[in-house]
Length: 224
Length: 224
DNA sequence: CTAAAAGTTTAGACAAATCTAAAAAAATAA
DNA sequence: TTATTTTTTTAGATTTGTCTAAACTTTTAG
Image (tube, rainbow over all chains, first blue to last red):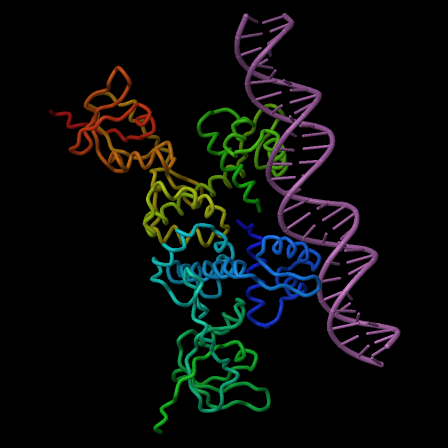
């Protein structure tokens, strides 16, 4: 069994390895863990001893099969608890991260299977992220950033790539919530902001925001 | 904020102080914490520094107001999670203790208030123990042990004073579950075992078992 | 009331996770 | 390709919670 700290390292290494292909660097881990590079090196050695990561000095790290499997299980727990908090306890989507961050370390496979069932085996968490099943399999469908859409294109909001409370609160205020359909009216050259029709409402969204909203595109009435 | 370990010490000191009136002894804590007396002394000093317990060398310890309040909050969380596990996730009453032991340390007052509401503000946990409200108040009604009842007396099973899985499984098998009404047919002199009518079923219960079943007595049809 | 037993504390050590400061390796730039 | 910067590692220290062994109080028994 792993300590909370080890679990957090594994989870962070997993998330970092999704963004960049190669090995994960010490400094990147240190930043995410809010700690110092020296501490990361110490922990890295420990995780390598346990065969949870591959590590060669100065070359960064990579999860092994068992390390990856542990990390995905933590992600599964985190996202299931987020669903519970939003669906059952009526928390808002910007309020659940920190609580799920604690709950994800509760160690009881039986509990998680029953929770999954209680929630009717959800496929996605309240931010649209896919929930791995108990074997670690999950939808890898990647959505396109709102900022990549062109004039006239349409789609549905499927997720976000920034989970900060301030960003989520802002989206809420704009009405940009999961499942909402939208159509691009125009992309403004000057600042890259996006003018769009959200259901029936017209609004302008900054490029910064558009970069973190994930869209499933759809064919917009091709006959017209 | 307290560490998990500190919280466990407070909780154990609280439980021990319910049984015997005086101060709680180092060795008693050590036994419950599965640790050594020397370790307990170290922790005791730390908790005393934080003004969570009163401590004089060789004299045992006693919770202060704030220590007691923290301990009761942990008990509240433990019992609410047990209700959740049994009522919502359909665990059996003998399966929930260890999981609740982990969940009780999750630190989010908002979470606990919402959980309480989600569960419709239960007054008792699955073993009949009272759940403190958010101000730390709770029913102090103490029930009588089944082993204290006399021939002809009747009552309802309200709780248990042993929470071990083996004991609870045994009760389940006998049909001795919360809310069941019973009447004493006879108390056997030889071994102190109790013959009783449980609803319509006659059965014999050992003295050891009877000592850990808690009863609310009722007047048994005094007219007859 | 003293001697033995029981219970408690101290002293010194250890493992886990962290830190600072300094050394070493790798990457980058002139 | 050498010098500088960036990144990473090592060395040594700190904190938390634990331990063993020994010393010290308190309680109990004769």
